[in-house]
Structures are given as structure tokens and as C-alpha cells.
Image (tube, rainbow, N blue to C red; front, side):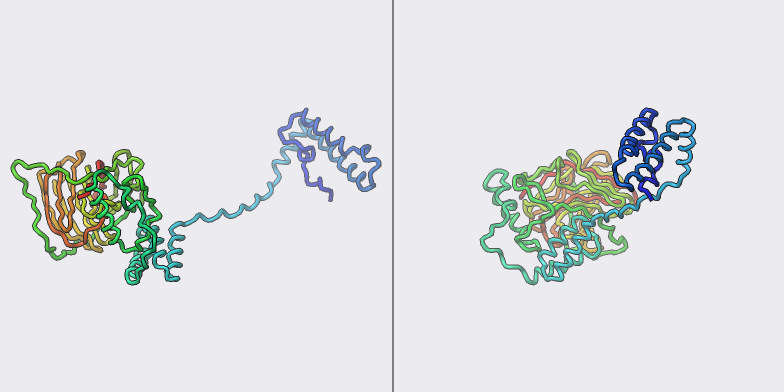
Amino acid sequence: MDDFEQLDHYELLGINRSASAIEIKHAYRQQMRRYHPDRVARAPTDERAYANRRALRINAAYQTLSDFSARSVYNRSLSARTPPPPRPQAEPPRPRDPQAELYEQAHAHLDAGHMTQAAATLRELQQINPFYRDSAALLAQAEAAISQHPAPAPAEHPAPTSNRRTLLVGGIGSLLVAGIGAATWWLRRPTDPVLVNAATPIDTSVTAPTDTVVVVSPSPDPTVVPPSPTVAPPTVAPSATPELLAEDGKLFDAEEFRGSAWPTTSGNGWSVSANDRSYTITANPGTGNIWAYHTSQAGENVLIGVDVTVSGGEAGLLLRFDNADSYLSFFVNPVSRSFRLAEHTANLNTTLADGGHPAILPDAAVSNRLVARMEGKQIELRVNGQRVAHLSVDTPPPTARYGLAAVAGDSLVKAIFSNLHLRAL
């Protein structure tokens, strides 16, 4: 069978189906100049026969397409033909799953006995999704192995300069305080001392905090009645003419959330976002605790202050954060004009101090200034410049991590934070 037998008239002449009469005539002449028998008279017999057959088809195509009525009938016959089956498309490549990749890398390090590399990989996975499979348990396993068999100190490798002298904010005294605090924080970390979190690079030119993490923590079991902690009773009674307490300490960081390292992300029923000069946490009813934390390079003895506007629930500061099962939270509820300091251990929520206070502004559209002054075991809580509680807390021990948090109860909670200041004591 000739190679042109399956071609329709348009394909044979090399034109599209909307070609004009002039284009049809021009295409016909081009094809005939190529395949007219007189042009191949001296060619081999088989070539002359092929040209003759094709010239006959070209003439038939031209006779049909140059006549309007014949062309219309022919076009209808083409439309009735069954179109050829579409070509099978290649299966699109499966999208990458960064979380699964990190999880597999961590398992490979654990199987090989490389606990330091496994811990670093699992921390990176925890920052993306703190609840991915059994990553939290694997991280605890790796850190326990590291603490039992610590790696030898590296020889002739100075500590990263981002945790030391580059954070000068003025004055020899403040440099010593910041350096001592950063060194204490570094020694308390349950990791190899030469590791730096690769997921959040440290900018050595500024005092920006690192180790940003967003965590969704389910609400603790409200039916559990924990034992009363051994703490000093909070001081909650204000004087008749209260004296406003100044935020003391050397200003170490003033966060305005412009180009901030604080994350902007969302999950099932919650979201966090860094905006111009503010940070917002929202959560649907029943979501539980939503929080994000940073690591302070000012050390453990710090004063943290933030303005918070909250509607539909409680919001405030995350204090002494060690891990998802060990931290303190200092919340304010403007509707009830109350505050609360709670210790979170696993699924147990222990209230260390709470009560109402006239310093708390009751308008949900107005911000309240929350301040936590932490020096050693002593914690002093303030609202709008007035002390609402002062107590000594043994657990969890002081850490350099702090954050912002909101609690979704029976209604939608929305908390807006601004003017976050960190001062070294």
C-alpha cells in the first residue's frame, strides 16, 4: 500500500481544512510540479508508477476541494469519521514528600548508629511537622543516646560566632551578661555542642532569634486534678494607687515582625502569620494550644514583654519551653479580666497561679501588655505595668526558649501580638 493512501485530501495537498480557494489551487500546483508523470519520465519504472498513482489522487483531491458543493459533502464525511484514539500520556511523576524523606534519613542514621546526625534530621522534621509519625519518640531516643555517650569536644574549632561576641548592643556589662546567658543556654542543650540548626540559619549581623517552631498541642485533660505545687503564693492584690513597674534590663531584641523569622503557615483549623509590626494566631474551637517559639540568645535570665489583643479565649507568652511536654504558659483573658500561669507536662496542665486583676483591660479590642521577668527560679508576672504574681518555680528548669501562644476553647480564638521586647537581666 502506498504511503499516501491513508491521507485525506487536505493532508495530501498539505493544507488545513480552512484553506481558501486560492490556497487550494496553489497547493495543487506545487504537488503536481513534484509528482507529474512528465517530470519522472526518465526515472525507474517503480518511481514512475508511484508518481502516476499519486498524481491521480492529487487531481481527485483538487477536483473535490475546488468545487464548493463537493467540498461541503466531503467535509461532512470527514466529521463523521471516528477520531484516532488519543496517545496515552505518561504518568506524571509523584510529588516529593520532604517529611517522608527526612524520616527515612533519620531512620538510616539510627540504624547506622549515627545518633548526632539522626537527632539533627529529626529536629528539622519536627520543625515542619511536630506530630509526624513517631518522630518525637525517635528524637528522644537519639538524644538519650547522645547524653549517655557524648561526642568528644572538637579540637581547634571555635564555637559559632553567631552565639557570641557579634551580638554587641552596647556596653561591656551587657556583653558579659549576653555572653554568659548564651553559653549557659548552649551547655543545657541536649545535643552535640558543635551542631547548629541547619533549618534556620543564624544571621550573625543581628540579634534575630532562631529555632522557630509552630506547634499544635491538644488541650490537656480537664478532669485531671494535679497535686498542688510547692510554690510561694502569688501576690495579686494591687495597692490603692499602684506603682507602674518599668521594664528593666538591657534591651536585647525588639521584634516588629517585619521580614521576621517567625513562621507564616496554617494547619487543620489554625493559622499563624507574621505581618507588618504584628503576629497573629487563630484557631477554631477545640483545636487546643497553638504556639510558636524562638530561642533567645540573651540567656535564661530575661524579661519578655509583649502587647496582646485576644478575642474568644486566652493568649499570652510561652515560658521555659523545653519540649512539647514541658513548658510554662502565661495567659490573659480580657473578658473575665483574669490571668493564668500553668505548667504543662505531657497531658497534665497544672495551674501555678491564677486570678482576676483590675489591671487587666476588659475590652477584647484593646491590647494588654504582658511581661514575664525570669531570673533563676524566680518568675514575676505583670499586666500593664502592675505585678499580678511573683513566685519561685522549680520545674521546668529555666531555658532560653520562649514564644507566643493562644488557646482555643469553645469558640474561635484570635490573638494579635506586637511590640515584642526581650531584655537581658
